[in-house]
Image (cartoon, rainbow, N blue to C red; front, side, top):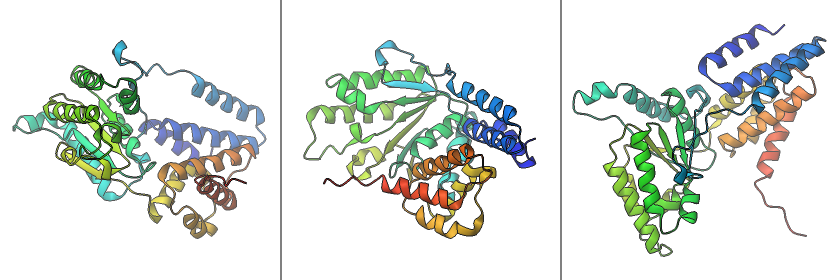
Length: 323
């Protein structure tokens, strides 16, 4: 029988819409049952989870054939509790959510809600996840614009594609994420700039300023020094992301591990080894450790195993030396 903590975790993850944590907790229940000698039940639980994960979800849509490959839409299941960022960022993200929910009240006073956010920071620090959280919390679809494909595939027609995307924002309210935004948002004064890209950026500035839809526009960039100054004036919020601090790294590991949480004896070493890793890298390393723990039919992640996974993730950053 599942432990009390596992049952509570299953209920919390289901109510919060955190599908991935629900699956992880269910796998923990399977591991627990295997240790109790209930191998058949454990296998049944794993089979159910595997089947659920493999089933295609009918949530990816394309509203226009001519935007195929450029706009991918889904209904994220990432709750706000899964986003581990400093309190200051949490407050500002909450403000976007609160204003959206109360937009009619603001409009009655001639005011608009925050709808345009520029997210800046290193890769893997939670920018794209923030867009997913906003979509989930507001019960909106997330529409991800493949900026790199739009620029490279439609050179000469990019401005026209941008107009179609902004038209889509008006027709289909949602959260629209421009990831890798540097591709169209680069400073117009850079020496390597070309006339076509200057026209694309000018078009974006015009569209975003004239936009009167009810959609949220989120642009994410890893390189703020490349962005044109005019962009910063077009967004309601500029949110800066960074690598997780010590308390955030511990909170992430605790959240992901759940009942598989390692003994506290080596927390100091764990937090030291994880220093310098992004949110995404810590998440991947921790899940790798959990998977090995489950496959070994063990109840807790051994600290040595998690340390090894974190070191492996950090080492993978380095290119192999040539002999």
